[in-house]
Image 1: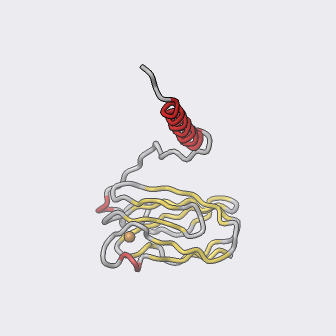
Image 2: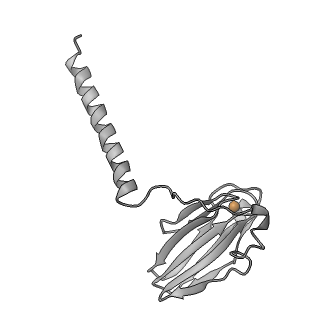
Length: 155
Ligand SMILES: [Cu+2]
């Protein structure tokens, strides 16, 4: 079978692009730790508000410049509300939803998590730059979706 040399050229270019894309994906997954989490933690959506983890959620210091915070994302607010975090600290966020799927996006950072009812989402971030960071829900969750916004003040 004879293949025209332009067709051969385009096959080679296509294969090369595919290899580049798959290599980037492999590097991100295995070397940059950007793969999907493999440890699923579940929670009953009906008991999120009373659960040990979320009932009295507050910013808790767990080490030097290290904090943990459990946040409930619900229609149409994040609880606890606006937060103050010392600059340079790392915060380990644990999130759950008692109703529908919400988003947890912190502006000007790489934090962007989906909060699915029944599952616990976790994300950590180091706030090195002082300033005001906006937390937004970026999953459409109902008529009050646009009111789901909080502020993290880092100082
Ligand atoms: Cu929402």
